[in-house]
Image 1 (cartoon, rainbow over the protein chains, first blue to last red):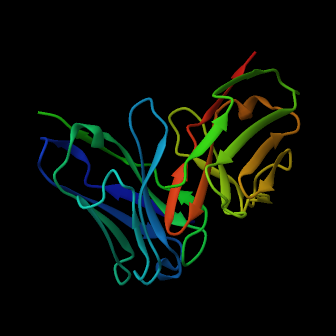
Image 2: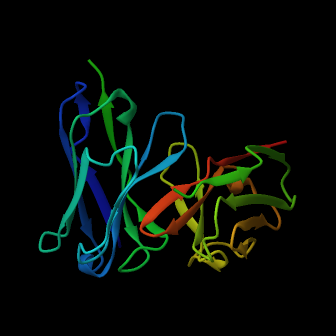
Length: 120
Length: 107
């Protein structure tokens, strides 16, 4: 069974940093692109960042470009999101997602999410 | 960036109704479109990919169509489990964007 377990969320002050992790199991991790999507409380879905299977292709939403960095460790079956200079508008539930293919495509399997709250 | 516009934002329907949700892209995306269902308090679930391909395990009452800039999600006969929020999403040039969502409510 495919499992994606996010961790690292919590309460953080504006301007500080946080690193999210996603532990993947049940599939060949390095065969698939991976993504982060977030959802602010009561709001819609916002794609944050994605990375191809071999890290050659990376994309970011304009709202996080220059502040967030996605990375993966295929040996550890793990995906990461380093979030710097956090703002109140970054408050959201962050989902880790397995894509449909190596390069991207649809977002096939979603984790349950980890909550990030940015507040003083 | 490519913008995705869904309509309607909210839809009231009854069990057994045929329901159609539309999604328009601000520029052509070919067939690179997916649809997701999100029930309250749950993670989204992939329904349709590549505009018209049904994800494994998804009931056949769901179907998708369209290409270029205009796309449609149809539920042929609405079931109690289908009352949820639906999102379209495009993937083009390693950038993904979602529509704002369509909430399907009980009439």
